[in-house]
Length: 209
Image (cartoon, rainbow, N blue to C red; front, top):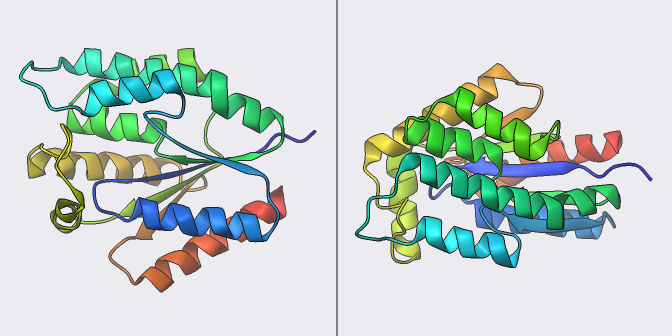
């Protein structure tokens, strides 16, 4: 059986990932493509517990390296329990954030060494990388205003604007370094325009399947 495809949707706060994930999954359903929808951190009971630890606001200062290791611990469980089995079955995996988010948030945002992140990536993932990264790109000032209306801010959403500017810059740098694997989508555009671009990318991937 042919291996499935790993598609990740990335971006900072307030870029519209939830709305566009729904569009992607409905598009795949309509075409009879078998898929699993999941998220990071999370995707399994253990990984969701780690997500809660990562996102919860606390008095204790969380060491950036401890944060990074929790992210990869959740990812290792997620890969073993959900992602790898689905890909082996020939299903597509649609994931709300993946390792690019680690490079963006822990690398760009927290300032951790990209070489260290890469070593953990190789240890946990081996050669597995997304077949396509769909990056919803938006000015952090706009994104944070959008996100403010969706509930109480978690530990990451409570960071200063400079943090999110570094996150965005890290995402864009990764996309520029491997343009064949990344598609940058202007998240300030109309929903119709965004979803037209998503559809075009999905159609290309379906032709390759």
